[in-house]
Length: 404
Image (cartoon, rainbow, N blue to C red; front, top):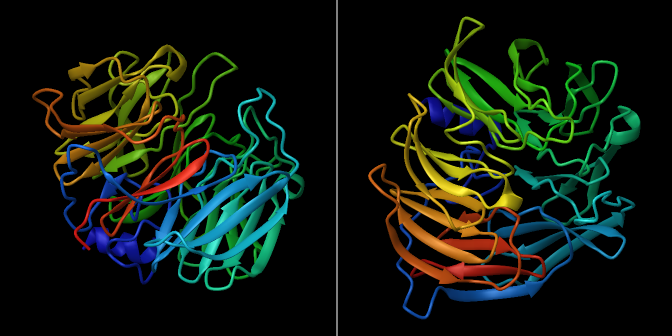
């Protein structure tokens, strides 16, 4: 019942097997749709693929429509595609002027959000848009960078929008108390602002803690829980690396009244317990699982995710959520993303390898592995209706894992 209430608050009228926002229906990296078939020895079946522009924003799917947010030349582009066939439905764009200071990629980072009949995007230079899902018509826009006097940070704006009832929530990192903002989903009108927290590269989630719906943010400074209706803070705590040139990018995980957050750069992870607004540290260290840019999943009170800096080559790990004890660690995969599918892990590595492994604390147990692309993969994938969608640096690809 508690999960159902959260689903209704976040994305009303969802199909059970859609993937309408970052990390899926509940933003926990878990797929709850139909069973996925094993792929043949030659590898997964590619149902369709298409050439795309730049960016690290993964796709989202709702009502048979796939939304991709990418950059084509000097245009940030929102593209609507038939999820089953790859056929175009509509395309909308606007001039983009973001330039990456580190020369990585000039495209958008934030995964779009579909809620009801609207699509919400957050561009690399802070442009916030609402689009009509059926037609692609622009419903409203807000320049978050200029309106809230927000810094683009190291790699531009990357917070994926969270919709709770009639409010759009973002960690924009604005000045004068506009670290986190709430906008009206119908008009883009400013509703509230809260905190002086600079923006991070993590996206918020909605959780029910102690029977209270709360928006959980992992900002550049640390953990913040607030009321999504008015921005009132429930609790907060500092958790950031000491070095200036660092980021917080791992999405928080909530299990009951316990909250897991993790970062890299010598800081590490912690499990906190929230009781009546007070936070108690269950464990904290930099040895268990220090996440750089990818987020973790939890199965049967075990955490699965990548430990260590991406550029140094991260290890895939299983960690006991309650104690922080490392149960197994697998080097050599470099880095990537992890999606939970039943009792399986779907691991998509940066080098384009898709691995199926058992979600078990006993050992790293691969059941299937296949090379699905030769190009670099940094965006999070999506799973909907038995289809696995991912984008690399050049193409968007749909793999079929259902019998249709």
